[in-house]
Length: 370
Image (cartoon, rainbow, N blue to C red):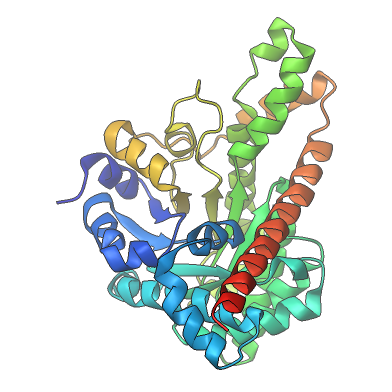
């Protein structure tokens, strides 16, 4: 029987996805339990998640040994390990994919983060991963860097569903929506089934509060302290207003929707609180509304199950109020553009570091088996 708190969040329009995947979770049946008990209808992964999952874990040793005997390169080994996990997860979620007309039941896998600023390599690997997965309910994650934008369009044009990741600013998010609509339009011309083509736009939340709160604390005035813990939600709500407005205003979208296309839903990422003084459900209860996804680490999911509300729409029509909060922050001399640009650069760097550490770990494992 599903948890009443997570069920309430789901009924409010939020698709609950788990921000985690590992072979141990797959082998233990934990994923099926979360689907059954806590309304989980999808999974996201990233380089950091796989690095933690594979590092020093015996669950992967047998497959690594088999691949090492075949002289597979470290990149080939990592691709095999990660795509096998994602493929197993997509099979578990296939009934949900079918029940939701392809919107949920999705599992994401990210292109090599070292390609974040290389459009052509991103497109090529997106197609490669999609082919290896060979599952309609996969999602290929592409960073929303400037170089990632044309890769998003080109990948969607091939009929490949995309999770756009590492979005921090409304300005970049609006460009992501444009890239999405361009891609869907091209996919339609290329004869792809738009009813199966899905995209989400992963907008990061808690990292914004961490960065802005540090600056507010440095200022230290009562006015600054009154704004603590508000930047993340305000920034996300402002982005949701763009979601509401851009799809409604774009005449191309009306034609594509009539042909069966689905809107690219905002996905709230980085929803685990970093500040222990804040409610553990802050970035869930504060971002409830129609047509959104919230991907949560298990700790946050458990907190929602224990104490989440999720009954109030905290997104629709909140754009003006959110912009007032952001204006107050700017009025204290904090440049949100500088903060958000740095968060994007740091996010890419963090994923590259995790990926390179994973390469080192797996290479050592391979060498030990030769």
